[in-house]
Length: 197
Ligand SMILES: O=c1[nH]c(=O)c2ncn([C@@H]3O[C@H](COP(=O)(O)OP(=O)(O)OP(=O)(O)O)[C@@H](O)[C@H]3O)c2[nH]1
Ligand SMILES: [Mg+2]
Image 1 (cartoon, helix red, strand yellow):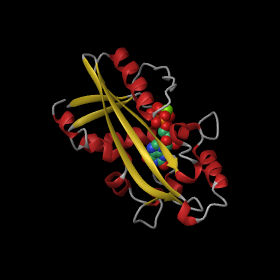
Image 2 (tube, protein in one colour):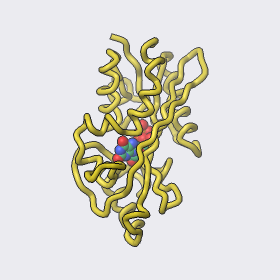
Image 3 (cartoon, rainbow, N blue to C red):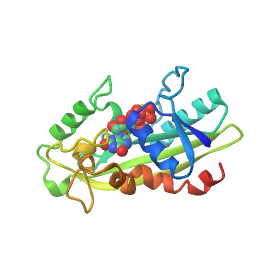
Image 4 (cartoon, rainbow, N blue to C red):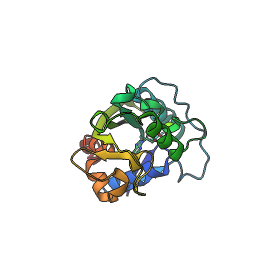
């Protein structure tokens, strides 16, 4: 079976990539699966693209094979696009999904339902030892709920209601999330590349 390394230490993302890539008969190996411990890549970029490239290219150099990285986040219109590239650590170190959710809900407490529009963004970067890095970007439109609901998924899923849904992303099954998510929209654009891996 073909393999690709995913430059992530996020178990929620890793699980989603394993499910997507199984459909292409490709084994997705995350940094959590490797026996060697890999230092965190510093995400010093100012865009999703820059951070995705940093992760993919630094890990590709280490392993000398194609590496895919995902830099993603939530952009909320009423917060001028925050948390954006700072989504993972919005409430500070160490990374804490519950604290991030509490911070967002507190910041939106006076924002009415129609003004709570938001979208998830996912930028994928594929770095190969002998070619330029390629990028694909996917979105998922929606809005921020008033309370946190559901236990599937990760991150901000319990407060994100996808457009045309009444449930939060964390109340959807993983198949439902994977059919509409920002990550799946970006991965679909990689299909040709995956078929030739
Ligand atoms: O509810 C969510 N459903 C999703 O599908 C999703 N995708 C991204 N996010 C948020 O954005 C951060 C990414 O930041 P990020 O790209 O730097 O990843 P990370 O630091 O978690 O892991 P790594 O891949 O860098 O190792 C994550 O931690 C989450 O807070 C999501 N939240
Ligand atoms: Mg990160």
